[in-house]
Amino acid sequence: MTERGTDQDEREEQLGERDPEEEARQEDVEEAAVETAEEVGRVAEHETSDLVEAGLETALENPEATSPGPPLDRRNPFLIGLGGGLGLLAALGLALLVLRLSDVITWVVVAIFIALGLEPIVGRLVAAGLSRGWAVLSTLLGFLVVCGLLGWMIVPPIIDQVTLLVNNAPQYVDHLQHSQWFVELNRRWHINDKVFKDLSGNLNQQTVTSVMGGLLGAGMVFAHVVEATFTIVVLTIYFVVVLPRAKTAFFSLVPRARRPRVVFLGEEISRRVGGYILGQLCVAVVNAIFAWIILTVLGLPYPAMLATLIGLLALVPIVGTLIGGVLMTLVALTSSWVDAVIVLSYYVGYHLFETYVLSPRIMRRAVEVPPVITIIAVIAGGALFGIVGALLAIPVAAGLLLIYDQVLVPRQQRS
Image (tube, rainbow, N blue to C red; front, side):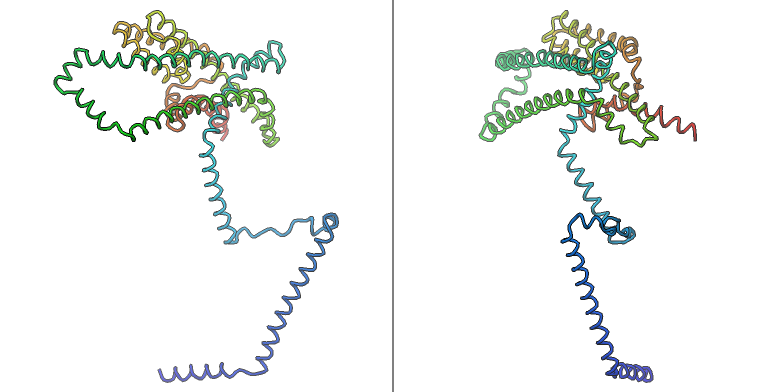
């Protein structure tokens, strides 16, 4: 231990005793380095100021100004971290933007699918001898007439029904209170006393405010529905007009070597999806007509409004028809059980007719979607995007099935 301590002390003494000449040389080196750095900075500043004063035309004549500089080192840890952070922020910003614009995106997608459904009509009119402009105009006029008829058939009955319900509400309550089964329940459980006690206890300023807030919310929902309907109609008109140019612009982005194949697949998907939408619309119209006939024959209330609602439900294959049948049966049950049995029997027969006769004839040129995939697509679309997702799930599934048949299966056969 003593020898080691002595050696360490001697080394420290030797380091402490530095030659003055060596120190002077070290200082000269440091001063020269500082002067060199300052000189480099002055030269760079002078050259930059000369380039700025020379202007753009003189700068473009300089090969160093027009040629790219050396590439950055992409393996630099700083650049990797910066790129990852910026990518994460961009993805987060894009997700937030999509969430904020979800309603607008939904309207655009719905309008595109409606335009694809109207395109086969435009194509048939053009094949019949009309020009593209007149065919588009005729199709759009027909589309607007159908939208107006649907509004005329749905809105007035709803307003009449709500008004009738409000006016007859006291009579309904009085009839309920004097019915035999309610009198028996009230005698046993004192329902009237409990209801009036709860109403008198909860009727305050907060309750009135909640009711007014609910009415205001219902009004805002109605205004939102009107806005969405108007926007979708306007966008549909625009997309029908510009659809050929939009397709051309999209296909121009594809590399030239693959463009013929992509054009074939895109046109085939467009044709089949459009044919599917138009065919399903025809099936829904037939369903609504038959429903209106059976409701009118049985004398059930509001046949036009119920038939229109059932036709809209029929736009969703299989599931929509079943829901419409259950709804009609429940409405008929309010009249009598005989009417309910008649309606149920009718819908069983109509469902068989639609499945084995009507749909195969109308959809023979469109892509066929198996029933299992139809149910799964409707459930998944409804869970993700609500009623709009359920309506658009089948055309999307039809397009994916076409890609499966035309791309994936042949590629696996060649491998």
